[in-house]
Image (cartoon, rainbow, N blue to C red; front, side):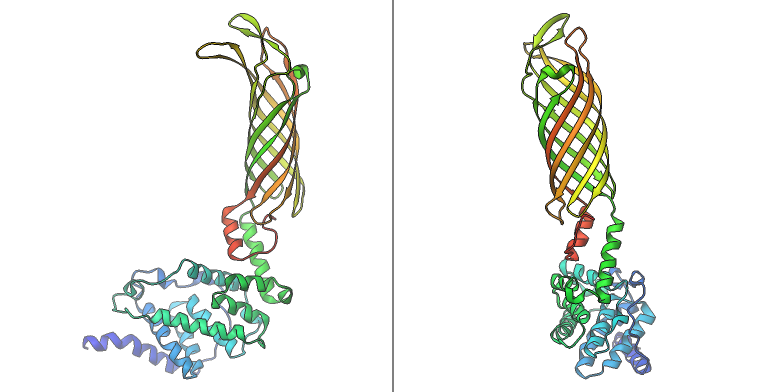
Length: 406
């Protein structure tokens, strides 16, 4: 056999298969498990299956123009039998059935929405084959077959969208393969689609994605007033700024907390400075702690949690001027309880504002000096974000209009 005969043997083989299977019954079902797809595009040398797909993409537009729709369906069934399901042929089957007015809800399954997302991802990363040898093996396929096939499939989708007599679900799917992804997913969430099988599939997929990512990150800044309540009340009220960072689940939250209090003390207090008792009103204070909270109220736009915390609380006072300045630290292990309330202003990125009330029991160490034991109360305004970047990307691609947080 010469080289030319060998080169065209895959074409002849596919043509023979089309003839044998042209009378086969057309299966209307989408593949039950899209994760079983034979992803020939990811292989360096896909071999015979790559040639089947190449020949299908080359011949399908011609067969359609000649009204040989049954032959296209037969080719799809043959390739699926030989190589497994693949999104390019299953999408073509679906659009052809829509154009033939053979579309109904039996074509919609749990993998309809994931397949639409797969196509969106392919288009958005501008997936274009630069070297045909990487896709179809060592053959010299340097033509623009795939680009022509994509144009053919886009025209099929456009004809589906333009046909207002087709079911709304068909037109919504058509919008996806026409390239109008956001419009497609917006249409699925419209009132017209409320009781459709496609809307049900969409809602179930969103719920499944949310269940995959139950935890969310939290980062926030707060600012308020720190108020000593016990023997240390003479220190006076101080401005406080701080940050929170951690995560939360459906009902729990865990955060690290760092806060800083500043400005001079209201009244002077005594400290032991290198064996001498001296007065000072210099005041700087830090809190390094952790908190665990329980969300007893959690709605779409409003959340309240009670929390307990444990941390290291320290006051720094100046005992002696010099170079460098000598600092005296008064540390305490503190326990706290509190309440945090949040109002979510953006359901997509989780931006919120709210307030935190934190009550802490401390006993600052100050031997031979003024008693610094007592309790403290912090009242702060807080703003932050509760988000999960991976979940955010999924819901953004779905153009989800509901609440992204819950």
